[in-house]
Length: 314
Image (tube, rainbow, N blue to C red; front, side):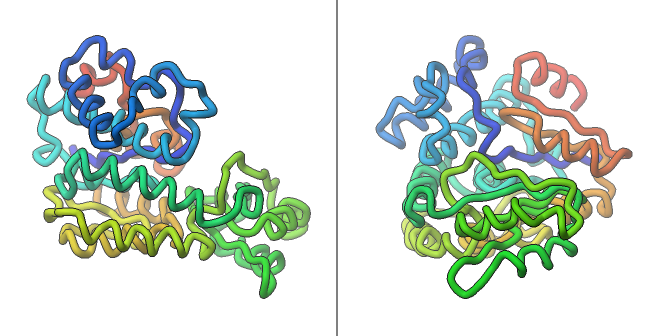
């Protein structure tokens, strides 16, 4: 058995996340308390009670998803005696999930990870005026073939790029709203099955996020980091790294760069990963894995039942 542990990105959050774990494990309460203290805000109350509009705000959703993932990791480690570094061949995370992966691999403290994600969320939101940028999912085109559509929708002033290469035939575009609207309008002419605008507040993983990348570069100067105890497969590389300076460099690049998730899944397959475990909220990444690699067993772990089952299997 060869395990990869992966961590979800934005969009997987839901009101009520973490409540069950908090009610049953002191370890989870410690995690949520530490995140609250780091942010000087009762984020856990928003996670449990909402409202949904407040939880989905980028600056809340990013640290909330990380906190939930890390609560699961800490419960596995403290309550079930399962150390990720002893079981995982690799860790990876989708966009903000890469910070969760880095935290789980011992690169950053929980407190620092929460602060970094709060700043990242705010910086990404502030990089582009609301309504000026967006994202759209293109279905039925490969990453290679979506290039012609991107070119047709971009000019000197308004551009869009392939932001997330999630799976074969599932690519997310990001850019100015004009370019995104154009992509939705003409995608079928380029062979796409459909192109759907996403409900997001900014053009993430595009050149428009350059101010946010600069903000993250400054923030990392004040953060203590260690080399990863588990190889981390970086979004912008789809290759594993462990040196903390390299991890930070690529986390900064990731703000404007493409999330190469299809290639990350490909890498896991090539390295003989047999089991992919999604730690935290939702089932997006385990769902992609099921479609991408029929031979790899994939599961999502976010409930007490899931945690107990995984602990028994490990």
